[in-house]
Amino acid sequence: MWKGTSCSPSEKRCLVHLSRGGGDAVVVREFDPAAKSFVKDGFFLKEAKSDVALVDDDTVLFGTDFGPGSMTTSGYPRIVKLWKRRGITKSGPEAITMFEGQAQDVSSSAAVFNTGYGHVALIVRGVSFFEAEYYGVPVEGTSVVKLPLPLTADVKGVMHAANWKTGKPYQMLFTLREDWTPPGGAPIAKGSLVAVPIDDNGVIDLVGLAVVYAPGPRSSIEEVVTDAMRFTSRSSITSWDRCMCSVRTQTANGPTKNCRCRMAARPASFPPTITARGLFVVRKLPQADDALCRWRPRHAQRDQIAAAALRGRWSGNGAV
Image (tube, rainbow, N blue to C red; front, side, top):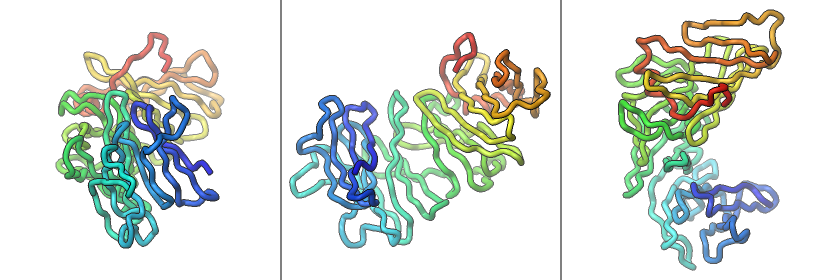
């Protein structure tokens, strides 16, 4: 039974997960989408509770049952290894150990984020079901770097958006399950969506950290999805202003956040302009259920906001 697929950034190679009866244990086989066939003598993992991600066409980060002591008490991989194609042998994978979690952890797993301009590989140590540590995997070498994030951070994605303050090419987006005060910074409320610069080696710089969205007492973030140069965040605020927003514009004079919001149920009286905390301006569009949102940052906030600005293009008609 098909249980899932993960592909390399180029999408030239994929790893197909096959399960006996839909259970957690899977067989992993390498698949060539162009040839529409499994790769002979390609990457292969025997049936086990495995976690695997393609870093590139010839490199895999994976955890599986390596024998006694290699699994957590929850029954999931504790050890993450890096496997190069040249290390495929008939006796099994010849791989380098990159990380070892604790037996009492939930799991240790791999996450690879493709930005379209490069990728960032992380190892996730699941300390508990709601707590995790993140480690950056270097492009070269075997020493992972622990990210200075709280245990309650939940990484949502990485995208291509160079930060002028730190010089790092990407932005990593994460939410917070609890309040957090970064070293030398201001407190950030739980539920916030935060951006931080990160490079190819998975090293972040808190100097460029910025809060992208902080929900109010009656709002929360439901979902965050990233692609190469933008992200979409869906938040529940009230029954009428639930919306999906994309941030994708940065101008020479500073960042501008634009989004198109779809009203779940337009209120009886919807004013043509609403300003909230001096940050958001919502203008009613001709369509009854649409609104165009524009973020106009105050001058004092521009340095902080620029750190989270996401580079891209904005069409003249305002369409995302």
